[in-house]
Amino acid sequence: MKKKQKWTAVFLTAVLFLLAGCSSESASTASADAAAEMHVSGDGSVSIEQESDSSEAAGTGDTASGNSSLQAENPDRKLVRTQTVEMETTEFDSFETWLQSRVEAAEGYVENGVVSGREAGSSALRSASYKLRIPEKGLGGFMVDLRAEGNVTYYTESVEDVTLNYTDTESHIAALEQEQATLMEMLSQSGDLDTLLAIQNRLTEVRYQLENYASQLRLYDNEIQYSTVYLELREVERVTAAETGSFAGQLSERLSSNFYALGRGFQNFALWFLGALPFWILLAALGSAAYGIWRTVRKKRAGGKSGDTEEDSGKEKQQMED
Image (tube, rainbow, N blue to C red; front, side, top):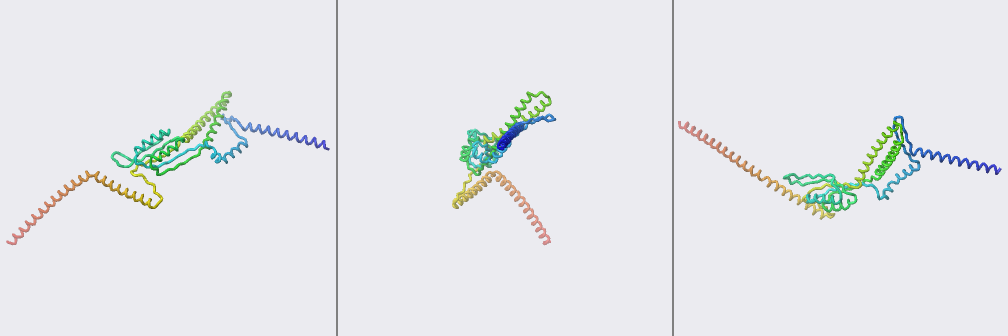
């Protein structure tokens, strides 16, 4: 009886080993088949499909779920920085000269710049709008110097993390390069004309996609390496002072600003009036001439009326004598 149980145990163990071997062999075959498959369809198109096993897919899901923590620990994140600054200055020309030299010293460049507000013979204050591209490594020092050069009235900064998009683009490029290498190897080995045409068509599509992804990657690199600074500059006669927290300080600043505005109003009126003095002289001369003509005409009319009155009175006197 014991001998029979022993042989039964040996038999079951052998069956289990055979099943395990068959299972592992079929799994490895299926994995190999799923790893890279090439299909040549009836219309001559060629496609290469690559799939990952379930463990890799699960790992990708875990990575995606813990992405935020990885970004916090990874110092090589791909960040795109954009800053907006609004400033006032009483020395507009010198500020422009300083800005050009400071941007060059930071190894950046002015992507766009517009200056407006002053025409020939005009006293209007000027304004300027710039789009600056400053290297990330020198952005901090540039912003410190910029704030010290004028009065900052508004400032904001935004940071966009493009790490996921960047790595995704790199993955697409690597996959397409691998497919391109496979297609080139097939192209050198295949002798069928239809297959050759299908491979060439697919190779053209792969190269086109590679160019697009490479262009997108270059754009990311430029935005990451060079931060964007939008600068709005206004020329003023007096910079806006920051109000202090105390009531006396705020009242003093308000009174000072209002008295300054009142004085500037009188000054502007005086400049306008004195600047138009030639026109006032011309108007006075025309008014005097018109007044003289009016008085002459009035005198003539008054003299004519008095003569008619004397003539009428003489006729009445004569009739009374008759």
